[in-house]
Image (cartoon, rainbow, N blue to C red; front, top):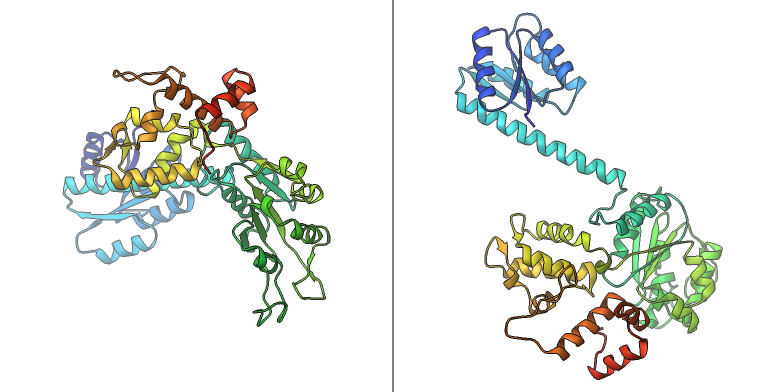
Length: 451
């Protein structure tokens, strides 16, 4: 689509020269002989750029600039001024002009200035479009995805973000549960408050209670002063309890009390403290199984999961993989790097047991080890090349030198298990075989889930 430019100059010959040179570059040009006429054209055409002479009878260029900026702040204006009147040009720049050119001007300098202005305008427009898209989709920051599965997640985030409801996020490790939690916080009325995250599986069991709820001086050996817990640090904001499914059973009643009573009691303390904190929690465990086995309290689960959100694994949203690869390439400095078709297909068709986290690590490694500007199939690690015999249609492509039937069968079983989160019943259904037949193959090939 041609860029539209309005040229305003009361010098007929100069106006025609400008018009001719810009049209020669492929721009759509409308010319006016006065400031008043130029503003009329501006309102009618809504151009990408306005070029106006500074000194004109009637309305001068500075007045034109002010009127354009008042009507459309994003429209760029280039001022034409006589040689030696730099002070006037500086005044115009302060008033919002993008740039200026001096008379008499070089035609190549004119073309370059206009080209840069339009490139700048395009980047500004793209930036605005991205910001608007983020606003429409809530602030999803680095969450990348356009698949139907992720659109459902985005829709849920929009609905629940600005409420006080407890949110419980489930999904395999590496699917981006904390990113979703941060997005919910960023789009809530608590956005100006703190976002405090704690991984319940990463804190030593003898320190976890103190980390969560705080302690008083002398509460235990080494407690030389009072310390606030994560709940107190999150006052007025949001606390994110990651891997809450692994919370010690003996601490679960205390967490339940915090949720019910909206207050916390420091370890060693006697007086409860009132809390104003929103709780978002997440787990990669099968929480229903944990409840059935008695390792997680059912009443606590219902308190935490007023709003459940499930994040699909990457293998269930393959449409997003090329987008994520591009995103991570740019993030890690590979703006100009691309992947050839076969490499992209291999990465897209891989099962990704480590999900988005594994994909990012893979892209970063490929960028570091690459030999050129295009990453080829041959540069992929062995596991991706070996996996690629299954294309998008599920057709097996065997190498010319032959292939072991037993190895092929083993890979098919592993693929089915990975696609179904190592759920044997689901994997057997996927392979259309009885479960006992699948178990026999698992034992035959000594297949174990990689932790």
